[in-house]
View (cartoon, rainbow, N blue to C red):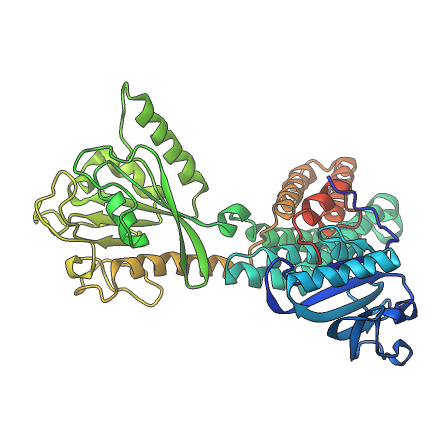
Length: 489
């Protein structure tokens, strides 16, 4: 565990990728140092340096020229860290960067920065708040454009502005409550009560709005899982192979071929997904291995962002599998190229679904071919609009191949979730959930008229809001954040 107490050391690090060759590497120095003491290392006259203006200089180690650099000096407090900051843009060979850093360390006693230490100083010097720091962490580690944009909005204070407004509403409610308790005789109990109720409604509505941004688990959105599930021999593994474009899963007419989950990463429309082929769901008396696979399937489904039920046309008409429909985000009905019972009409109320023809798989496997566009079924799946909603009715062949069609459905769903600017920091989600629980408790207590209990709950909410904003961040919180940062940030 790193100790993130504020240090007075002058720190130095490479703020760009220091382990790969690149055209430019940026070396950052921060601390309360006098720029003029560094003169021996610069060919340019540092007395003529204008803060926040780029200047050109050779970097020197006695008679040796280390590099030709562009440099910028930021005078405190107008810098990222709130301290004096010097940034050197040098040639990005890792050997060169390391050599230059070592000269500053050896000649002036500068210390190599810890992971995230520059941002930690920015936090302690009030250049950034805790919410912005967590947004920066999200931005730096984002694996999709949606997550990056979410982190950028936090860094630009959009979320912290909402938290500050929450704190303002809380302070008004606390003030109203104190007036109600101590001064209601002076201004009238009815007016005091009305002021408290009106401002409590504003506080409750704001907390409710924040809670709606916490509907999805951050882990489910940061690493969204697409899970294929359903009864055995429905074609999950065939669909899995089609989606990833290779024969990763074993396909066989034998039931229960997939006894454990298999996963692969997919990238689609600037988002990374984890596609999971799960074990078929069925009763497995006496088969311990298969039972464990089914148990894992159910655990995966709980954590999945998008769940695709794959079920054959024959299995669809069985009552045994009806329980699966309610948890599916998309239903793929396979083997529709086989005339199992043309008199039975497929109807799924309120669900998106696709009808597709498979090739020679499953117990019905009489035909040959693949899942590709040439075998797509033209049937009652309803019009497909630009957001790929499916309704009752009938249309001709699907214009998109199955892979693109399914991934566009999932991608559209993810974009819709991110349009609400979800909160992606577990710590913040946990605190907001606790605040909402306390707000709900106050509503229940209010009916009893016990002002003392209401006051206790209001104080609890105040502590939680301070924790949310980071007015007094704990050492554990700082360790969780900054240990995840790269060195040089």
